[in-house]
Image 1 (tube, rainbow, N blue to C red):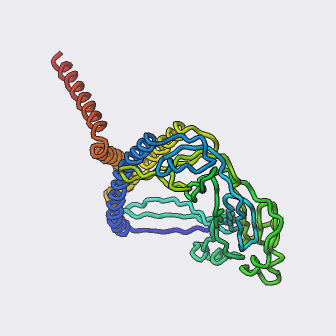
Image 2 (spheres, rainbow, N blue to C red; image 1 turned 90 degrees about the vertical axis):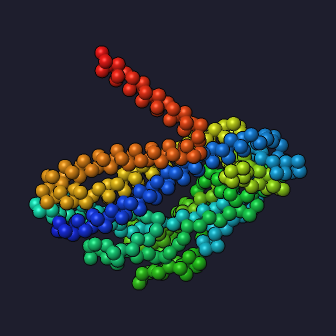
Length: 392
């Protein structure tokens, strides 16, 4: 089912909104500039912390006993992350022996999606036709339908209960003779579905808003690793929930961390940045440090791209009034808008490169100096070639 809304804006209204957007654009450019600068600092200092940790890391073969000589030292070790603790979700009465037990809730809700088409009018006005469609899907959190555009869908999203996602952790996770802290235990992968035998239906029913004619306890269905709240699991209706349980069993892991007594803490580098790492399976320290460097570089490039795009979007908002003013003649506004988009892209990219280069001068002066020298050399060579061509 589709619901259509048509919105008309006059030229003066569009001009007013575009000038208001200039401030937003400036704020966006400033925020993106800070992000780009901070990212280079983060990348540089993280790389420094990784390198510093690598220099002082010791490979430890035997972790079956606590070695006082290792206290305060950064070690690399491989072994079994194990626990004998039972972890329990008291609400559902689900219990298992695992490093952690996770509860994930999903809700069957209507989602509002929109598609807009905009047409410019002679004189600078604009007509926007927006089509809203509604489909029921499983989502991670309840959706407030009171703000839906189609009045017939407002208030139709209900929920049988509000169940939060939660992680229940074992208090004692061992790594040989040592205790694995939560910040490392949380990095262990390999989660598996929990096969549910039964749940505490009375506890769950006490949280439910069962529709008239239904008993809450009769709307609780256990299927494999999922607890389904609803009348018919095979035919979900708005408001139904499905809660899935997974557990992280004991596993062989490799860690790099600083020993403190009978447990571990992150290594703090001289620049203040912290470093620790856990990977599933058996991995050498060299491989783990290489993985850490790769991750640091990937994050750096992702944030560089995000920062550059944000700068371009900000510049697009700053230049927006030009195309709106020219929209008195729609074709002229379109041409100017396209040109402004190209300029925003080029200027945004240039500005991002300048910020990154400035950050490199601050944090990596030797590399930045080499790049600048290479750039100047290329410019000089280009100039000399051009001069010789002119003389010829």
